[in-house]
Image 1: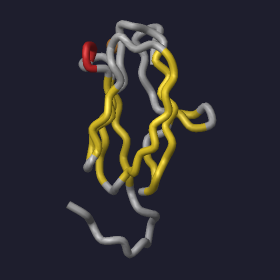
Image 2: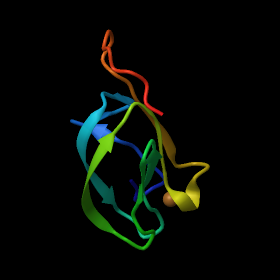
Image 3: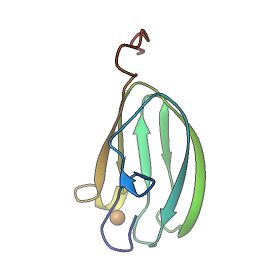
Image 4: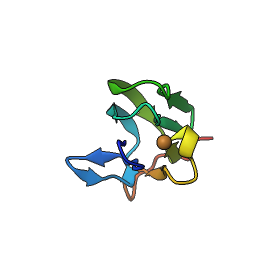
Length: 96
Ligand SMILES: [Cu+2]
C-alpha cells in the first residue's frame, strides 16, 4: 500500500480478487506512516499499526468466504475485497 492512497493484494504483479482456501504467506508492504493494512474475514483479523512503515510477512489460513482488506484511517477510499472459493466442482462443504 501507499505511499499514495492505494491498497491492493497482488500475486506475481497482478491484483488478486479470488483465491482458493489454504495457507498463504502475505507480504505486507506499508510505505507510509499514514496508512495501515487490515485484513479481516472468516476467523482472521490482522492489521499492521498505522505508524508502521516497512515490510512484514504474515502466514494466514484463508477459508471459504469473503475477506475485506482496508486501511483503517482511510477505509472509504482504501479498501478491497478478496473472495476465497473452493475449486469448481470441489466437494468441500461450506464452513460457518
Ligand atoms: Cu490509508
